[in-house]
Image 1 (cartoon, rainbow, N blue to C red):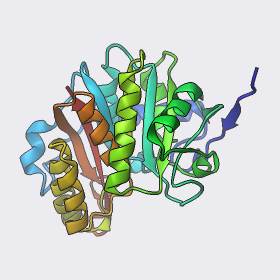
Image 2 (image 1 turned 180 degrees about the vertical axis):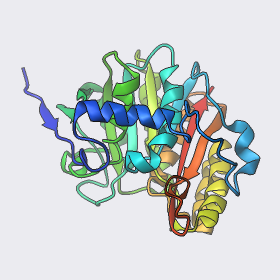
Image 3 (image 1 turned 90 degrees about the horizontal axis):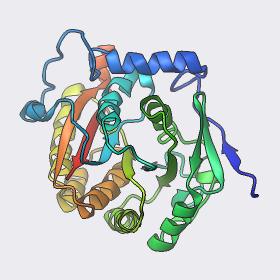
Length: 302
């Protein structure tokens, strides 16, 4: 039997607590934060630029969920927003056997589009197995996806999603991790279609996750304006307009290709609607709105 490697945490103790009990408490706090899905604090006013989307906010039933978008900053900044996507995903029935996670390659290490095989991903809450058979099949289907451990060695974008998944799901699930350095429209379209083809031919229940933060280090009002325009194109499942807005407004979303690929896959898999579950900026958390990062939780359903 082949011995599986272990991908050790790269940001435990930095983006989230390194001890299991403290990590569980931190995640619980994200869910019950005033900005979180179970928060009991003061109601946060609609963010300027997103007032027209407030009617979409709420707790989705998750029954027909195909995919989610979730941010990936440190839990103290984006965890409450991310908790909205995971609260919706917790209601998914049946629970997913396979979770395909896509995010940006922040460091530019290794292959331009990379997955991993023959390994576990470890967090303080335990190990999650990579579905090597399905990952290899996706490599064959896509023609642009490589197997490259090095590309995943330092990045936090997928790692921070795993404790949230371990928190909401107690059953065994496997993952296919994918990080993208190339994030252009053609890449998103090709990878998204390959993912959809994989899911269509699989007997497993699958959830797709796009990991991305939105506008980086601009004023709160400017971030809300830009992100509001971009979110409208995501909710419309319109890849062409999405990339047009990205370029026209110079939106500094780090995982834009991951979102694009998931949009393509979700639409091909039958998604007919998308819903904004929560939007906020780091300024809503810290009170400093001079230079913020935007965060959104979105779900795609049929």
